Length: 113
Length: 111
Image 1 (cartoon, one colour):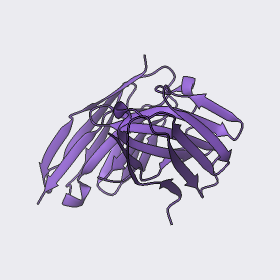
Image 2: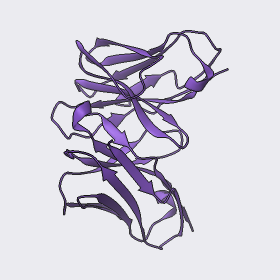
Image 3: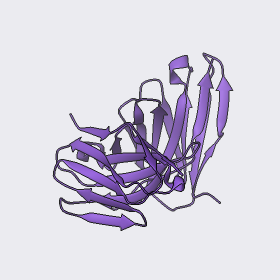
Image 4: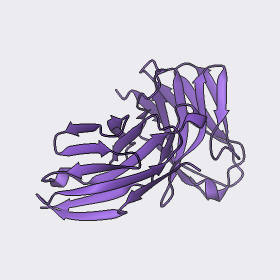
């Protein structure tokens, strides 16, 4: 089983809909991250969380919200989806020691029509 | 502004033809530079972490090196299974342990 699991793997929806992407991990890591990947732009940070009570905005948080339901679960919501939020979304985790690598899930491909 | 630039964007090699990928960075107080491999439809897979200038890490046909301004990923005698997108990222102190990624180099190795 994967250490970092993202659901759904693919989603097609319409403009204006509310969408939730979920991430769960079995690595026991405290730190979790949401990134988005667009062709030609690379991976960009949306939100990150160092523990259940600590949520921080990343580079491109506008239009997104997150919830850290437990140490192992971190969800990303699009309250009212728009077409330019069409992208690949990745969840990642890392330990609390500085400089530890991040470990990624296999992503959610989201298309907003 | 912290930045990471990778070159070339794409690289085509024949099997056995060695080459290098470049990652140049500008960041205040580098905490770590990371190399990842990404296959189509998959998330980035961790390869190496480099912490200080002069450091080198090796894994099979890959060797990563670090200077004060850039990192190289050397690929020796590549095989078709080395075909992937290689991502470089740096850790930015102002974002905790979050990473700033380059746009990647897509490597294609033909037999």
